[in-house]
Image (cartoon, rainbow, N blue to C red; front, side):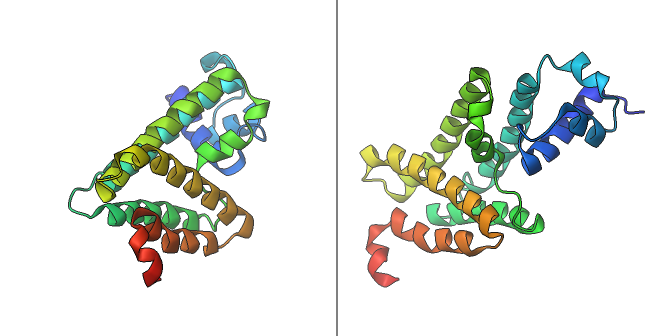
Length: 194
């Protein structure tokens, strides 16, 4: 018997929701993946959406740790920091045979099915991730203070779109394209050297 059913449900939720999404996942699926009785779900969570927010928080913590390790690595140049982050996520995607990208855009894509609390939490996670990208952009383009926030948010959106396309194509083509284009976005003078 699982000792901490709540933790087991949340851990299973990260795995299952990352693979299938919240809308396509039933409480029974989550309970089975956690190895707990289905009734224990309602003992710990008031709704599937409330559970989804907690799962998103767990997932976001993991991504934040990867961002801290890669984007916050002061031993690397800004473009290398972004590449390290991309490579880290791409490695995980390859292990999943290109079927799993990022839970954040996946949940955003199905937001019409969920309540405003989940939408608000997604907005907060997106803002937090954009801020991390923005920090790196500011280092890469110190004379473009006004454009750093826009470019950081754009890069995150482009990255999320890349991960979605990767899942559709089930290969690394979109990731490779993102890697090729990224340096020219950070330093427009590199466009001519491609």
